[in-house]
Image (tube, rainbow, N blue to C red; front, side, top):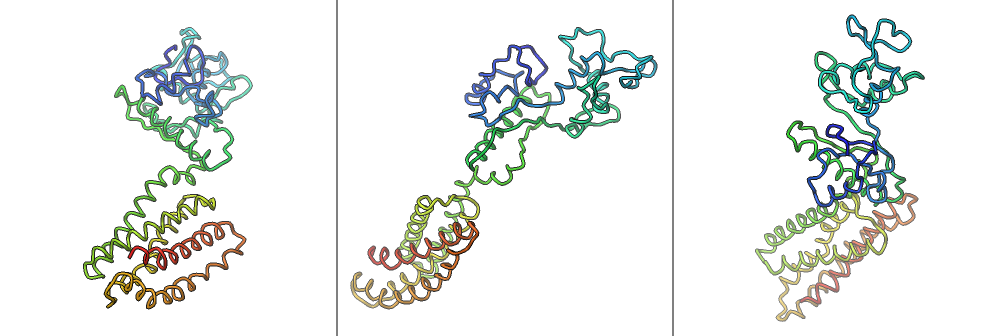
Length: 359
């Protein structure tokens, strides 16, 4: 492909758009020159629908235009179309098909481009569209501090569409950063941003956060139970294992009942770990201090002593959440009524049936 500095935008020419996925998937060292390719042709995979809109392409067309960029012959100040007497074109000696501002020329005429409004004579002037897209030093050298490239995503309908589009945007941004910094000439960092991203970013790291939060919660419970039950490793392990089984069943219920894993359901899972302690710990302690000689008799004794308390004091008390079944808000129906109903049901069944069966 023809070299256009480091970045190839939407000019087609001889650019091989299929190589973008070799760069992304296989980390090929091709494309020191190709950073933004026509990924819109692969909208099914990248979720990008339109070709990138970038001020640099308009800037080049602005300099190529015969009615756009003019400077005063005497002091070099900008001349606007309609008042070009005594003015010359900014760059008139370079062939139009190879025209690209470099070095001082790039810095000098960039301010012309940004200050000039587009019009009938010069539709490529950049003030209207690209003034917010450039942050640069207007005194001395026009060093560009930051800029952005705009593109559109295809229509996103599901949560998976939203977070997968975010994932692909970050993959492309990381590759852009890598290629820009590969020469060592710049430390520029490319970041992707879209308004819905702040709401769907959680889904990219939800499983690692869920595993870590649940593991830390269960570990803390194991340590506390080990200390409070008189350094009884076996009893603490039984409680921790039962809580793990409750959470596994609860997550199975979430899948069956179409409850998505997000920040709200993660909080409810951690709360479920805490509530499950109530179902398990009292019964285990009653079993440990029971005077009966055999395990089966101790299990019967602990159930007779604590079973009714667990059923009335924990299960029936927590059944107050049943009123949420009639809530109009889907958040209360799905993430509170359904999940807390599962916590109560699985906690009761595991404490009164599963745990005595392990004895």
